Image (cartoon, rainbow, N blue to C red; front, top):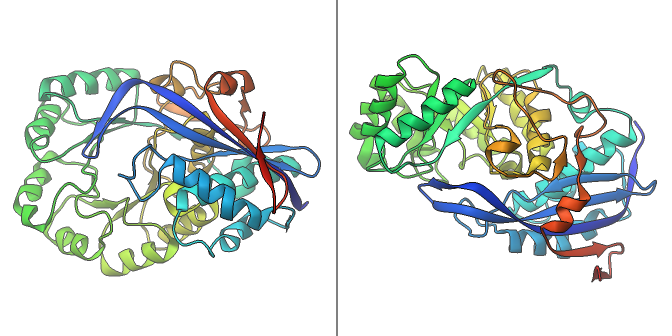
Length: 380
């Protein structure tokens, strides 16, 4: 493998407007700021990553503003002008900063991209992915009524999605799930609670067993693995952990305690592709299936998700819906498309998509160029 040396990093902060607002137990999002991280190596090759943050610290402690600050002031200077033998090494290079995993992942994934290009490989090939196409699920935000949810589900079933995930919260759960299951008795269906319940709700949550769900995702606190183990013993429905898993060590502890039967791997949440691969491998060794969750990514983050999902233990359709489901226009060419519920894993170099710089420019808030450890300056 040819090593790379990072010559320059450009942070492009853009604003993306969602086609339709997306509602979870955290709140409703209609637009988001994204920091695109462009890593340029000594030969002039560019690799791309993005901060999968929102503008508020509701999913975790990060926002796009804080992630950009951490990247500029701490993470990028650590890797600037360093010879990187393999991107799997970058995770350990960044552990001097605690948490801030989304910021770390934005830089680390850009390095994976440029490294794959430098070595004439697709990203999926570089990480050992075997799947040539991935099954796609659709995540549906909280709707105003059970009937509106049923109508949405019907649209996406007709479109060919292989799994339907519905967001739930107290007051927006049992009636909604019952309506969907009555209309669609056999579709692969799961519920995502985004930490909206406590152990006081055990009886209520056990009522969901009758809906034959694939899983219920993160029903309890965002940082919990102990109470989830208690709940899993009470429920027939598999629990999937999301927000609780920030690292390989978190995954190991959760599996040891019996806190879940499925893990959702998000590259941003765990700090990069390297840690994602390690969690994937641990789960595979323990017979725990994994899938790839979504964070309303632009095409750059979506491309990284598609490449990761080529790994063999991603046996559950992920939240990797096509670009057109989120944006009027994405910032990559070609856009991510789905055919019969499948997305082809790109075979081109790196992430397999080109960043459309004109579309980035149209959405640009500011750019910052970092070329030395001591000095950085905004691009005029």
